[in-house]
Image (tube, one colour):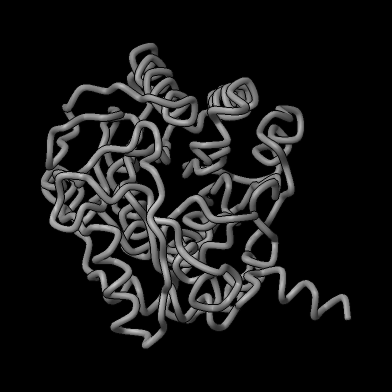
Length: 344
């Protein structure tokens, strides 16, 4: 019996694979490697000392996905696979809707065919849109404001409809806030293509010399220092949340959503200052105009996850900065560095 991890070579997927393997699970990984690299999976094996199957399969290819289920005894699915850049989704909405929603539909069809009805789904706090409510509870209004967020919201509704049609389905929907940091080994981490759209890899790439300076979007928000406040959560804490959610879906049927965050907000400049303090590296920055759709303050109400999953984030902002820097300083060019060395 194995857990299928779609998108398992990605940032959160690879960290979750480590936690699953260390907890004794057998896993099968499916990824099309569009925005990730297979090198991350080699390092997952290195960290855990355990082997697992990997299939380079796109969820849009239902026939190939079917073979994964045919040749493996899958008991549950943790579903990460999908396009994930908010800005890109605004420019390429049809690609995002087709990839994220059709891929999930294909996955659910194949799961249904093989009687696999347990899923942990990687959703996002973007489903809350520009909600001014803080902390944000799971029952806050859902009002995604960009195509990426809407794909997550639509998939959430699809999964609820699926459970309504067949109550044997057991689904945990995990709404992430702002994952940062990396595994303490420094061997796996966030490796975005091009200029990062997330804050931590932007900071670390400036610190390591890949980028000249950090752009801080907005300096006039009604916050302590004028910059946006967000709920940053360590990638390892987030990965452990998936294991707790997996425990729940294996034990009972139903469908429910859970926020995964720390329940505390930090401003952009607070994060920069914490990074400089614990690493001794300077991060020059300049202010830029606010981005459309950004709000001043956003952090999670995490009481439901603690109450129903028995999960709470353990790592603080300094841990996130130390581990994020350990990854970037050890891998200044990300996974590409290892690939370039191998080619030489």
